[in-house]
Structure formats: structure tokens, C-alpha cells
Image 1: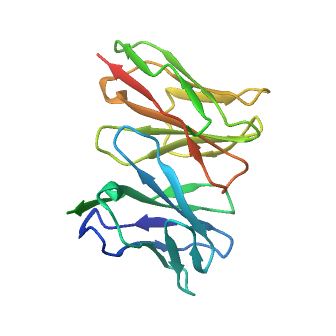
Image 2 (image 1 turned 120 degrees about the vertical axis):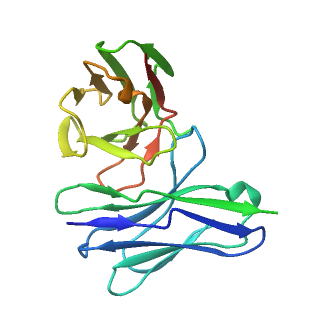
Length: 110
Length: 112
């Protein structure tokens, strides 16, 4: 049974790189790994998605090792506005089930 | 603006009542998802539809039901409401299963 686990909270400082790791055992080759950002009282917003190795876009990078048992969201040079909850999501290709992590509350300090 | 609309924005009702939440997906999106988020809690996936058909069920109570209509809008029906059903209910849409989800602004339900 697939499950996702991520840290409950993290602190960092402006200008630092932040890495948030999600553990997801028992996922298959075709299962997507996606990360979302959520601010209070707003719907989550897509950050990045990948299958394997490394994906980079204008706001983040996603690292997925060969065994795919975890993934790491990397936010370069964070600012105060990056304070939010970050969710990892695995979508199972076999039955379309959505396995959401419980969310990581990231607090960025000046 | 994600392009996903939800109505109403706020809803206050009493225990035992029934309510209907409505969602219009982004233009062209065939998949619709419903989520429940209680105060300071994570997202609970309820149910997903693709082009009118149910695709996956999450932790949806038997008192809750949903459907997606031919014009692709979706409704979530909550009945025999309890105090614990008070939450933010989000709808999201995507082009297909597994694709990027776009979330609506949510409906805040308060059961008194």
C-alpha cells in the first residue's frame, strides 16, 4: 500500500536553499510525483512534477533517486513569501488513487 | 485566478441538513477532484471524476456523494451534516488524471 511521509515542519532563513524530502514506498514506475504549495485559506498551487532523476523549472527543482522511494523538493534562495505548507502527492497510475502527504509547514525567517 | 470556480464561497447550515457544493472546472479540463480540509489539517481526497465517470474514491463518507455532469461541472452533496463536517471544501480540475491540478478558491462550510 503506497504511503507518503514528509516532515511536519521546517525553518529556514531568507536567501537559503531549502530541501523538503518526501518518502513514498511501493510506488510504480509510471506513478507521478508532484509537489504543491498552499497558503492559508487558499487552494494549493502546483509547483513541480516528475517521474525520475531531476526536473527543474523557474521556481524549484525536484530530485528523484533511482529507487524512487523518496523525492526532494528544492527551493533555491527562499524569501519570506515562501512561508507556506508544501504537499507531496503521488498519483498511482494503476488505479488513479491520489496519495497526499500530510504537508510540511515551512517558515522562512528574516 | 486558477480558472476553477466554486459556489457558494461560504455556507452556514445546521446539523442534520443537506447542502450541495458546485464546481466548474477550467475550460478544457476533463478531470474534477473534490477535497476536504478541516482547520489546520491536511488535504483529504474525497473523489475524482473523469469526463463524467467516477475514477477514484478516497476517504469519502457514505453521507457524501458527487457527480460530474455532461457539461463537466460537478456537484458535491453532503447530507445529514454533523459538526465535524465543518471544513473548507476544494474542487480541483486537470486535463487528465495525474496532470497538474488547478484548485478553486474553496467553499467554507460551517455546520452549527
